[in-house]
Image (cartoon, rainbow, N blue to C red; front, side, top):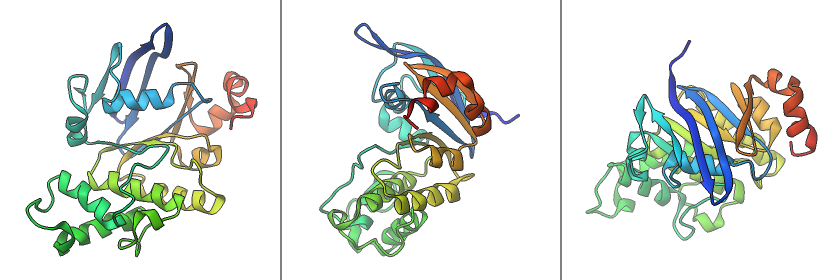
Length: 248
């Protein structure tokens, strides 16, 4: 049995009288894609926020490679090997795709802040490598404001990859994508399997069933089932709470 890389142990988060994370426990192994599904308002994005250090849990623990993260800043967690994407891409719209990835590389220690990164051929070549991995080969010089929505999603993935993460937290990477864009994103993520572990929050069940090694179902802040795609599809409680409710 593989040793988990990321462990979420009995996590609890309350906002006033509302419990949005209700004793959640799950894990993610190296090279695995573990999908987290559930209806809107189930607490999926809140869980990602806690893993990244954007939201402080009220109880429980998060461990990366057996090291607790609770006292670490967001920046320290990135240095440890965590990276995330957002439902709405957070990118620098007035700069090129290559500039955006170069900035992430500089933050990770590649290149020098003392020289213009656009004049650093080595840095640009590194950035292009990550753009290619995210399916954006040949788009490095394109200004972000001229990229399609799906391409912006891919750019955010390239930026995350440039931090050289061990764990990628993907918050609805298919959101707002058309069928062709979704198919391309699925292929990009499939090619990354084995290189980086991914916790995939997603409503697109076609993508989930195509990609996930394991699936956990979150409903009202609580994990109600974890298993393979076949096990989740056959689970009566899951079908009643989510898959059969028209949210898939």
